[in-house]
Amino acid sequence: MADMIFQASDLATKRTEVLDAARDGLARLRDKDGTSLVMLPERRLRLLEEIARWSRAHMRLEHLLRREVAPDVGELGDLAWLRAFDVDDLREFVDELHDALLAASSDEDPTALDEVIKAWRITARQLEDPLRRSILLGRHGPDDLVQVSEPQ
Image 1 (cartoon, one colour):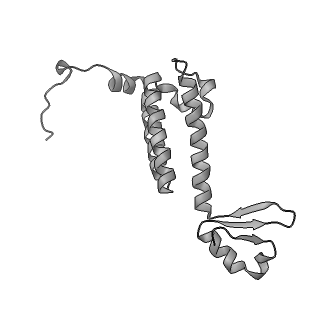
Image 2: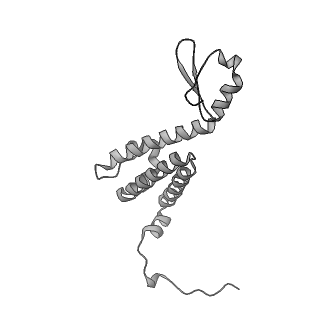
Image 3: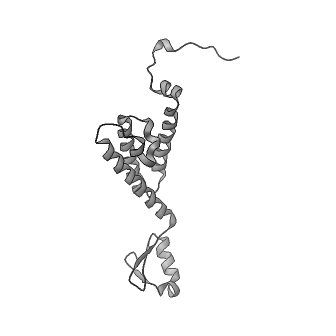
């Protein structure tokens, strides 16, 4: 039934078949004026929207990073939360985003993509704080460590 195209009149006469096809992944419907319509589970639509959104972001970041300088906030746009990262970190983000996009598409599940974005957003927030940034990115040697006693 994957190649079947329903007619507008089928919504009344074959509604169960149309809904079954949609539940199974996709129902094609040809409207009276010839317009092709598609019905699919909302979960799948949301996945496709997320993959499209993050694919655009991925391509934009790849393009910006070809210049070898960190993009400014205006260039990042809705990805301005990435401003805390240097060029090398941004390249690593682009690589991880690429892998997550492939996994989400292959798995038909946005979990891998959601996890990568969440982890990078958390790290970005930590780097915005000067003290945390110095701790996370600073150099630490053995002299910086002290012995502590067990709390009583």
